[in-house]
Length: 244
Length: 121
Image 1 (cartoon, rainbow over the protein chains, first blue to last red):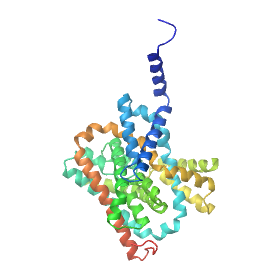
Image 2 (cartoon, each protein chain N blue to C red; image 1 turned 135 degrees about the vertical axis):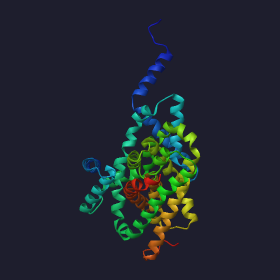
Image 3 (tube, rainbow over the protein chains, first blue to last red; image 1 turned 90 degrees about the vertical axis):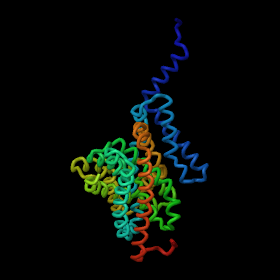
Image 4 (cartoon, helix red, strand yellow; image 1 turned 90 degrees about the horizontal axis):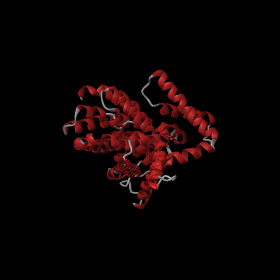
C-alpha cells in the first residue's frame, strides 16, 4: 500500500460524487437535448427528427450503459422538469396578445375540442382493445392526449398505471409533433389557429412546443387546446370507462 | 426580471394551493395561467421582462418534457409484450384526433364566416 489512492479509486470516487450531485444528469439532459436540436436543424428542421425523441433515446442509452436508475437520473433532471409549471403559466403571455382572435374563434374552438377529445379517447382504446391489449394497459392509455399530471391522475382514478400513462402521454406528444405538419398539409388545413388547436388537443404540451416553433398563433391555440382538453378528458374518461 | 419570475411563481403557487384546497381536476399551473392572464389584462400590457422570460422558455418548451420522457425505461417489459396494440393505438388515435379536430375547427370557422381572408385555403 502506498499513501496515494490509485487511479481507479479516484475514478470510483469521482463517479460516486457525480452520482450524488444533480449536476451530472442535469448536464446530460441539456447535452442530449442539444444533440437532438442539432440533428433537427441538420435535417433542415424536419418534424420527423424530433429533438425530444432523440434526447430521450440518448439518455436512456446512457443510463442503461452506466447502470443508473431512473430515480437517480431524475434527482438531477427534476430541475428541468420543474420548469414545466412556470412555462405553463407563461402561456398567458401569447394568450393575452392574441386575446381578440381567441374570443372571436370561441365557437369553432369548443366544437373542435368536443369532437377531438372524444376521438382521442375512443379511438385509442378501440384500436388497442381490438389488438388485444390488457385491461390495465387500456385504462392507462385512455387519457393519453391530456397533459401529463392530469392524465396520470385520471389513470389512477380508473385503475390504470400512472407511470405507464406518463410514458404513453410523452410518446403521444412526440408522434403528434412529428406528423402534424405533413398530415394537415395533406388535408389542406392552412389556418394557423385550426392547425395549432388540433395538435394541442391531440398532443398537449409537446404538440404546443412544435406549434410554437412554427407559428406564434398556432402555438397560442395549441396552448389553449392543451388546457381545455385536460379539463374535458378528466370529465370524459371516467364517464366512458364503463366500456373498457 | 426578478419581478417577472416572482409573478410567475406566485401565479403557479396560487394555482397549486387552490387546486389542492378544492380538489378541482385541473393542474395548478393551468389555473396559474388564468391568474397571469388576469394580471396582464389589469396591466393592459406585457412587461418587457416577462416578455423576455416567455421568449426563452416557450421557444425551448420541448426540452422540459425530456426528464418525464426518459421514464419510458421503466416500462420496457410491457412495451415489449404489448408494442403492437400500443404503437398502433397511439399512431392511429393521434393522427385521427389531429385530423378530426382541425377539420371541425376549420369547417365551423368557415360556416360562421370567421375565416380570415389573408389565410387562403
